[in-house]
View 1 (cartoon, rainbow, N blue to C red):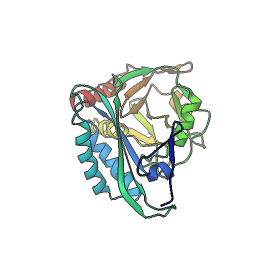
View 2 (view 1 turned 120 degrees about the horizontal axis):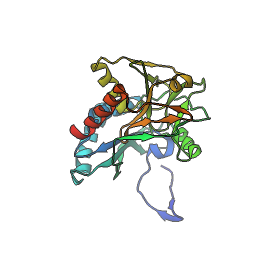
View 3 (view 1 turned 90 degrees about the vertical axis):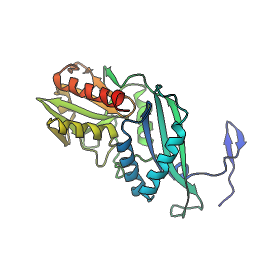
Amino acid sequence: MAHELRFLAGRPVNVGFVSRAELLGQGVFETMRWQGGIPLLPWHIHRLKQGAQQLGYGPDQVATSFLAELEQVTADLELHRQHVVRYQLSHVQAERGYAAKAGDLTSLWQVSDAPQTVVSCVKGVEFDPVAMTTDPLSVSKHVNRLDQVLAAQRCAGKTWLRCDAQGYVREGLSSNLFFSRHGIVYTPRLEHWGVAGVLRAWLIDYLRTQKIPVVIGDFLPSAVLSAESVWLTNAVRGIQLIENMGTTPFSVTSPLVTKVREAVFELFYENP
């Protein structure tokens, strides 16, 4: 390995090793809401294993080490306090080059305070004027998030919906999109764009068990603007009900969206 010299705030520091996540964006991560437990843990593990396999890690080994480390990380967390727990997996850069042999697996855990509610409303949502990039690895939550970073800088705190280069709506900046019309729920296809969230996966399963039709496909902005209700999902923030986009209002009290809102609340607060 070549000689390394690292600086922090202008001063040399020694961290002992460097990961492929930092050097090349090779790694996966999960961001979870913890409140005495992680309600969506099976869905997080499923996506983590998918991403691990896609990037060349043993999925079962990754899941086993993840669960063992999670137990240690959360052992001292206050039982009734809400936290965001972020896990990142990569491996040590043992040699130079893209095709370098993998070193030991390395993980990074971060714990912070969680938003106080998992049901909220948001006003004045807009469409991002810049098309999002295509991502052939979208099935995994990999660490290379430059597209989202640049979009976050552009939106300056606004809530945006993002479209692909063909003009189809795909997702929010860090959330998945749903909308409903005439008792049918629609959510964009995400095979090559964005991130297929774990709460999105849970909600699709839930709606189908409730015999509510779900259509996954390609939708233009006009389809969203003609919806009865529109909402965003995120595993940390829960559900955000969109009240309006410009002069177009949406219902946040329709029977269907009320049912969805109550189901999400129950998921987080009655099944930790």
